[in-house]
Amino acid sequence: MTSDVQMITLPNGTSAWLVTGYEAAQQALSDRRLSKVLKAEELGLEPELAGSMLRMMMFLDPPDHTRLRRLISATFTARRVEALRPRIEQMTAEMLDAIAAHETVDLIKTFAYPLPLQVICELLGVPVEDRIEFRDWSAIVAAGPARQHEMPHALARVLKRIRALLADRTAHPGDDLLSGLLAAREEDDRLSEDELTSMVFMLLIAGHETTVNLIGNGVFVLLDDRDRWIRLRDEPELLPTAIEEFIRYESPVATATQRRTTEAIELGGRSIPAGSRVMVSLAEANRDGARFQDAGELRLDRAQNPHLGFGHGLHYCLGAPLARLQGQVVFTALMTRFPHLELAVPAEEVGRRSDFQRGVTRLPVRLHGG
Ligand code: HEM
Image (cartoon, rainbow, N blue to C red):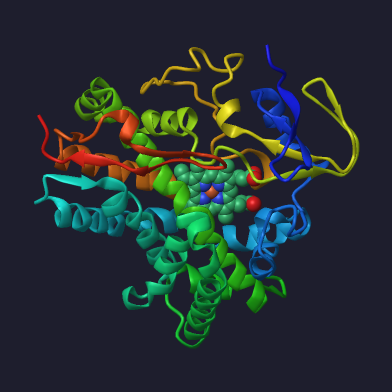
């Protein structure tokens, strides 16, 4: 039996503690002795990116984290998310209309990838004609090492666009999230321009590919065993539990962002010294047989599902309600519109990635299958 917490050596030769058991993962995610403040080198960040990234609340501890999280939570409310539903439904329908005449499409390229980006732009109130920098940025990030050299330029463009948007909203406030953030005050505590820029950039980074993976992984597991697709299509009331199960079984964020011990701790029966790097595998924790019955099986009707796919503790995913809403709209639309959807290639030929993220990169489907 492997341990719930093990020391591993990373490709760059440094060591880290990898947490794979559910209980130890839950503890690691909520233990204040594990700090999220890391240096740019530790995150493997290019210097150009480091400045904007390290100001994001996902890389901060209290009290800095508390302050930023409170300010954005006041604006990114459940009401604001729910208000997006009709627009998400409309954008989903338009994208599905645009592909409906085809026999076979790559569902990632034509739908699962572009939709969540449009949703974030909609949330932020980015006008359609100004979305190009956001698209370019996300495409370069998604391409990985092959397009890494383009990053600095794309980053500069996207940050410039965000600053221009902020200036515009300062002059002409609307009812979008950006205007809400600009107005957010806590006593005299306003967000600085740099903080606001990083906050918007964070939503783009945290909210795009994760949601692409939720859609891609979900559609793949349903079509890989078509009885699942048929069952969910015929029993749509199972959708809420099915979405949680997709996130448990194929966790879009396979490994949570890193942490570092500020003092020596005990975790999963191991003594971890102060100053150690800790990585939490949400994907492994979510398949821990000690916590989940039949952990290795996908159950669309799993009622008890305390998965860690959205994290746990102070840094629990801020966008979870929006991700769930997109899941509901998307799977409902796909099953209604294309009830006979099927894979167009053998499952082994579907493009998949499993590193820090777990997702489907290419998903050829027949829209009007048998
Ligand atoms: C944090 C997963 C969608 C915004 C997190 C964390 C996880 C996660 C695991 C915690 C990371 C850690 O503790 O190191 C997911 C999954 C998603 C999703 C699986 C889709 C299925 C979104 C969306 C948004 C978003 C749509 C916003 C538009 C954030 C933010 C944080 C976060 C801002 C940082 C919270 C903090 O540090 O306090 N997410 N996420 N996420 N997520 Fe998500």
